[in-house]
Image (cartoon, rainbow, N blue to C red; front, side, top):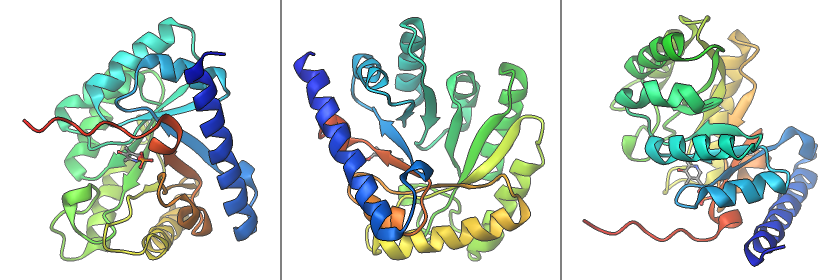
Length: 243
Ligand SMILES: *Cc1c(COP(=O)(O)O)cnc(C)c1O
């Protein structure tokens, strides 16, 4: 094993143990948690190493980087599912629908409409999507529902747009990033409540994408089904240079 492969194997083992402990504390089955390894800023070789270590779910947050890695990983024969977790610009929809298996970050009506139209033209199978919720109504960290006075009304509008395209989009659930000033537990419980009312209407919407390296325990306690782990597995990212 190369040093890097060993390092990733060790980190993965630690994070799987962390998930197992969080599940034990919450009385949950670890089989109900999907670990999505967020590989942004790291090379495709790391994606291949992770795939070799049994990771099937890979997440990225920028289209250009993700598209290149998905192409390279497919060429190398890696069998992974690609999760797009970052803010998605409408002009990137055409690209994202070609490689993504699940888009976590649908946060607006126009984005949902554009993604449905791109999926119709550029892919064969329906695209799994999550409605990203802005827990505190502040758009800074992404999520529906920018500038909304009535958050539930905005969530409703995006939801209605997603389910208006049943041939191209499949609503699978909700996603959020815990706001900086909130306790993660309170944020993820609020997300779970929103997930519950959406699932009451749309039984396929079983996914709750919550929890990152710093707050996975709170997410598991609140019912997360998908945790998105970057630095805890790959290492600390070098901050982008300031232009
Ligand atoms: C980068 C990123 C993550 C992973 O963050 P870490 O703190 O490194 O685990 C998770 N979700 C989203 C949306 C991200 O952009």
